Image (cartoon, rainbow, N blue to C red):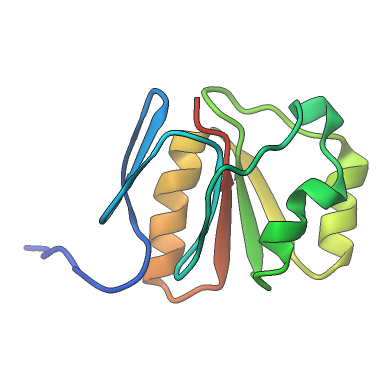
Amino acid sequence: MKFTADSGTGNLIQSYSSGELKLRDQTISSNVIISQDQIIANWNPPSISQLSIADFAPAMELKPDIILFGTGLRQEFPDLSLLTEIMRSGIAIEVMETNAACRTFNVLVGEYRAVVAALIVE
């Protein structure tokens, strides 16, 4: 079966490599929060062990159903109480390597899901 690329609209991640994230019309080399229609550049969270709910406020304000938290080159979980606090607000959160978060983001955007990616770009 032949598949064709959907050119679609909105933010789709074309590639992620060491220290660089490419979207349709721009290259980002810093931590970022992305939704289908918004980009919050230069997101500056502390180390993963020191993250708080305030660090995810910009992502939560976009009212997603799910936040994909890309933790860089390796999966690293923040404190469980932070994840619980986000989920209590009615937003699901998944923690994964940034590369996996980028792929998952594109799939969910393609399914018209309300998704936000909060990405550590290393």
